[in-house]
Image (cartoon, one colour):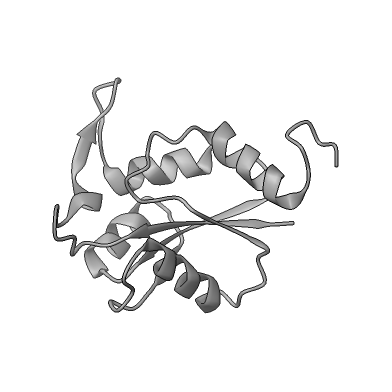
Length: 130
């Protein structure tokens, strides 16, 4: 069973416009955008997963495609990340039984956490038993 991990990202935040494109310096001293760091974290998740960035913004799309992310354009009428994830899932043709909303500013989410979530939702324990 393939899990769809959707990273919703919007530019037009009222509290912090452009947040996904802000550069953050990591422990190595390398600066990457927040959306890139979240993508990198999502790509560490094991199992049969597909990761996409869902955005209504061309700047975020360009940035994400620039580092190799699959991007799904969503409408600007989405009121929150959950709606953006649902719209992205529909645009991809549906069919995924598990959709994980990994917020675009959740770069510190450990891969094992999402893996355990997917396993729990699929009825399979983290050690592979049903």
